[in-house]
Length: 161
Image (cartoon, rainbow, N blue to C red; front, side, top):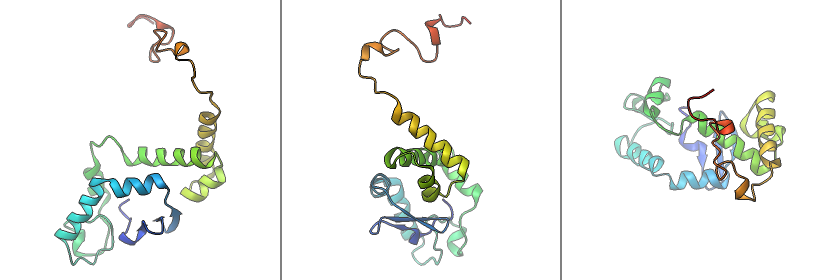
């Protein structure tokens, strides 16, 4: 994320360049970028605070606005600390969503995200399990409606083992 440059996000061509590889920008991600007030606010802040910076990176700090390097790993970690949606969670969610949308094909996942073989297979397997799972059509059979507690299998009283 800290290496992402302004030219890497091309909403018109529906393209996102990550690690030098162009990837198609799906509708959900494009819409999230367009409607995300935090991203738009950050871009406005960047334009207003450093209108003449030569730094090509999407995210700049007061230190990197004066040169062309990306923000540091420590800076980005501090900026994102305490957020519910971590970068790791967003990345995993995006990969699983891609597998659910385009089918559980590990070759497709490896190509789109640059994943290694094991990771691509793991995401494809997870998506396949979700897609093959029958839909809950009868709410009466749900554990929650039967007094079940997914965190307390067997409905044992709290505290008992």
